[in-house]
Length: 217
Length: 214
Image (cartoon, rainbow over all chains, first blue to last red; front, side, top):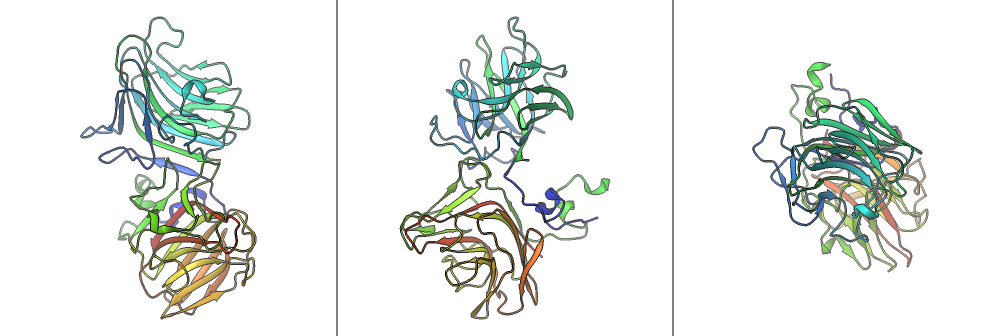
């Protein structure tokens, strides 16, 4: 049954193709791999969900701030690593929103550590808030096109989120089914993120991620 | 097929196989994984630097800087877990079509260069051609074997395999050249070295490295 002796050949169907940049994290082990990630945001915690089956990485925000991980140094725009093509890359993340109310969780492809100043595409899970139109929705979010709500159910279950940036559109698939297509892509080369945040009120948002893979197509 | 689809192990091995050392590195993230790779001060000289590159498909970048004679070496600090019959695949690109010198592959020792047991892809247009040559060192001597494939400034997938009686170099799946002399006679680690012979910055970007016992 053995087909190839290397990961490379399995990923590329042989050895004739020159593979592009790829990133993989299974979020297993004792601590977050700080060679891959840096965390940002005031307060909150980022930790491996130890002794929990399929726990992966757990992020708990403070009550008033987003908590996230990405490829940026401290909050400094001059120290970021963005190896992925805004017009040809895929992000796959298996993640779960744990907090029942007033919480948002998302994974994104972004060109900056600073959310408000970034050009990005996000797969976002939004819990119940106070009548926001995105309440209890899985959404494709971007500053490059109008946000799109999907019909995905199972808000507080693990799902496989796939973001694909194509030449001029971004597609969101969940659990293998295309759910939304946005008419735009980020403005610059991008890095991946995973984040949770309170949407309102004084809750601590909580999300788990067990797998992330990003690659240029 | 179902029997083998649940584990990475079964992708590479038959169930009765006992897998040897195997490393996979994508060179992605915030910084070079220093649990695996040595990027300490002794790995660079002059104006050379080593770090992940903030560019599309940048991977890790070894740069000499502009001081002539500067050297950057990326390896595992002599953690040589791969025997003399091992293979390595790496994807890399040089910044320059002339001058500069690089060794990329499996090598023993922490100094880089030609005087250690190794199987490496060698580039130096100063006294070799602009093709990817194969360099092997064993038994106290080394052999440069002329490659047949060029394209230093394009990204290529290289595979080097050291067998009992032959060393092979493949580029993008095509056999580039082979050698049957001075084959490596010691265990090795992945190692990438670039040095400068002029006041022009030379770089080597690597986006993937995989090595394993064969």
